[in-house]
Length: 291
View 1 (tube, rainbow, N blue to C red):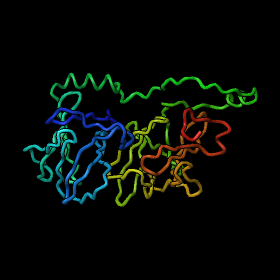
View 2 (view 1 turned 90 degrees about the vertical axis):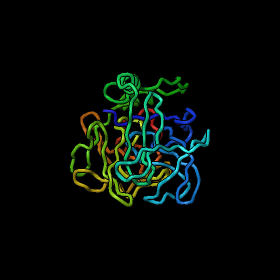
View 3 (view 1 turned 60 degrees about the horizontal axis):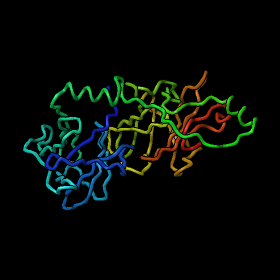
View 4 (view 1 turned 180 degrees about the vertical axis):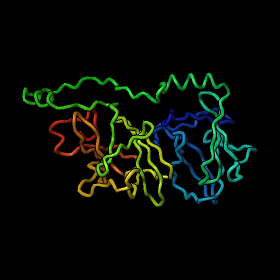
């Protein structure tokens, strides 16, 4: 039910927040920790999205190596006696802001993790308050009106356009096999980036939360995005991101009574998205970073 829960973690030793609201991973505030692995020391930003294994760091992360994690505030080593049931490495515990704790494996590449709640009823109540009964609620934020003088012709053209509002659920389809790309209220794509996996995107317009089953480095374009039904590539060779120049993927979304081309940037962290030039005559994306 809660596909894009952003966990807020605290150090189990000093109790201070580990959240970094300036440095985003998966377009959400990251979990900031000091790390030591393979003889190297540095800082790592972990994804706060539950079930995501993405991170951002400037040091090399050897696959299979066991890491030591330190709180950036008290500088103490965060560790427990519990061993990973998958690989035998130590589990690393963190306190949850809503009560309870989450533990992750200290071995790079191992995906074992689990959540424990002190009081399940209180935790579920807080989840419902923040995310709603059907997942996170994406409500349009009010913005101050812009004082722009428009001619009557401009106003008539805008009124004739269909406006896709922020928070609109986009029903995505493969432009090749025409099958729905929506699975369990997420926009699901097959991803190739050294290894194959799945990329789950928020299907709500102008909401950029995502998670993947494989590691995706920040600020890097993925090698390929494809349909998880027919497995045909969605990369559009004729268009590129108008913000960073990276390749874009093309999917079809439903608007009015037809399907329109919708483009998304393949660079991790880039929020550019847009429509084809032909569809711009009839449709406008509200609060779009492109328009």
